[in-house]
Image (cartoon, rainbow, N blue to C red; front, side, top):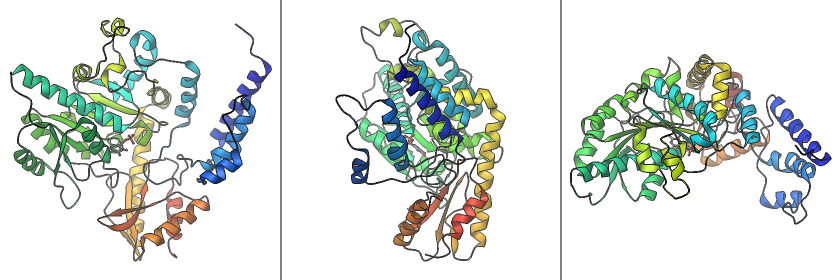
Length: 454
Ligand SMILES: *Cc1c(COP(=O)(O)O)cnc(C)c1O
C-alpha cells in the first residue's frame, strides 16, 4: 500500500477531531442561517483552480458554514420533523462513507444488503406483514411514496392486460385532504388524478369516506393511500376500515407512515395502527422518528415482486445482475446507484436492541401528552387538537402571524429553540414535533414561558 503523505494524514486527523468535537457537544449549538451576502463575504471563493487545501477548507466549514446551518438534532429543534440520530447511527454513517459500498446489487454489496434487509424484515414483522415482505431504503418518503404508487399502477395495468381489457382513460388514486404534499407531487410526475376523500372533524380518514370516494370515482382507481401519522398533527387514518375496502376491491393499499409509523413500536401508540397488516406497501422514514441520520426511507412491499416488476432497469451492462436471481435493492424503487443508507439504522439497532427503540418512541409520545396537558392548563394557550403521536399543535390566544414570527426569530437568535409558525384552516399556530429523546418537559415549558409576552 502506498504511504499517505503528511497532508493526507493531517487532514485525516483534522476530520476525526472535528467529528469527535461535533459528537461530544451536549447539545450541539443550534445555530441559525445567514444571508447569501454574509456567507459570500465571510467564505470568499471556495472552489478554485489550485484548491484551498483540506485543513483550510475544514476551518472554513467549521467557522463559517457550520454556524450558518441549523442543527436538526438539537433538543430545541421542534419544527417540521427534526432528525435526532443515535450516536451509534451517526458514527456508523462515517463508516459507511469510509467504506465505498455500492448498495444497488447483491453481487457488489451482499454484506451490506444483508444487513439492510434484516432491518426491513424487522419493520415488516412489526407491521404484521408476512415473512415474504421486503423492499429497499430510498432517499426519502417522497421517493418512497412515488415508487410504491408506480408499482401499484403497474400491477393494475398488468391485471387489465391479462384480462384483455383496455386501459382506463385516466388512472386515479384515493387519499385524504390531510395527506402529505408528496402524494400530489407523485400524481403530477405519474400524470394521474388524485381523488380526495373527506376526513372527519378529527382529521381522520375513515372507511365510509373512502367507500364514497370509490363509488364516485368510476374506473381507473389503482391505489388507496392512508396516512399513518399526518405530518401536521400525527393523525393516523383508520387503516383497518380503509384496508378492508381496498382488499375487497382488489385495489392496492399503501400506507404513508413517513413520520408516524415508528409509533407501532410503542404499546401506547400501536393500537392506532390496527389494519396496517392489510397494506400492500408502506413507508417509514428512519430520518424522522427512528433515530437515524438523513436520508433514509424504508419502502416495504407485501409482495416485493410487484416492486421488482415495475422498477427493474434493463440494459446491456446490467443484465448480468438482473438475470442472477439475487436480491438487488435497486430493483425495488425508482433508483439505480444507491448508498446503503439503511446501514446506520442497522448498526444502531444491532447495538442497542429493539427495546431501546420502543422506549425512546414511547418517551416521545408521553412527553407530547404531558406538554399538551400543560398547554391545556395555561391561561392564554389553546391546543388545536389533542396529540395522538408526538406532534403538539397549539395557539397563543390572540397572536397574529407577525407575533409568532417575531417570537420565533427571537427564540432562534437566542439559541434556545427552533419553533416556526404553522397554520390550520387559515389560523396561525405553532407546533412541537417531538422525535428527539433529549427533548425535555423543562425545555418545552421554557418555550411556553417565552410566549407569555409578545
Ligand atoms: C415527511 C413526509 C413525507 C415526505 O418524506 P421525505 O423524506 O421528506 O421525502 C411523506 N409523507 C409524510 C406523512 C411525511 O411526514
